[in-house]
Image (cartoon, rainbow, N blue to C red; front, top):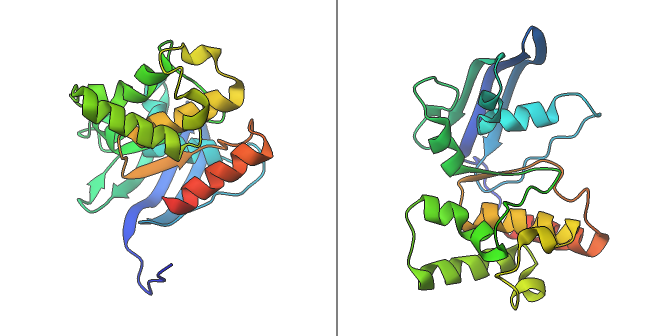
Length: 201
């Protein structure tokens, strides 16, 4: 592994505050996120880790009364992700997220992974097949589902659903991937596979 003296910035929180209504949940966060590096957030339950992560892909916009102050700069184009001029859908195309609780779509295994690719206009079956297989392999679930890709995702076990959600996030080659305790529902073997995947990425 190459060690760089001056790692490249991928994103940076600058004096970031976040409010749920009147309650201030994040206070003056300044934090660099480096390209091609793993950045881990460690802290007690309720300290704001998930709130911080969800700020990056504007998940808080989905609920009224939430508001941001400060900036999250995203590189190399130096976009402020929190700017009202920036479309949250565009942000989510560039930044993938995997939640603590798996949330597969009510579709087949295949269509769950294909979803983001189809949103981007990809309809070539060969390209879809290749990307879907690659993503499912990356999420350490290909061998378990390769013969049942048309089955409903909801038929999978909890751990399999979580790995499917990771595959769905990987399929679109996001620039930044946010994991919110994605292995908390997984057994040690599946957890090890996901840790290996993160290292590989």
